[in-house]
Length: 125
Image (tube, rainbow, N blue to C red; front, side):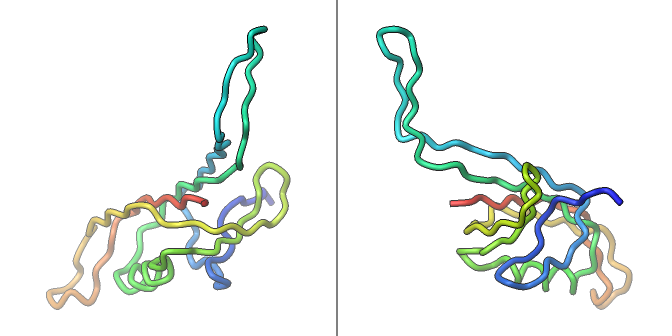
């Protein structure tokens, strides 16, 4: 079976979604950088951080509400499998912007509502 690299837990709770897409960017944060007289680049790296881009599956309104409640805190402790070395790691992240679009309403009292897949990013700090 193929290896799946994605988010395992948020704040100790198992991640509830089977994602349509998962992308990881890795950023090196520099305090400063300069070039020496001999044209050598010198970087003062402070940290390496992650940014996750996820796309959710289509889901019902009640599933959406549970998921959004799971990610509403300012600090999210996310456990994920590192795609580069296969180990489980944990980091502190915050959630980026979310835009949700209703896909279809199945009845008049809005109790059976589906939302389209949407994207979110989680930024490590």
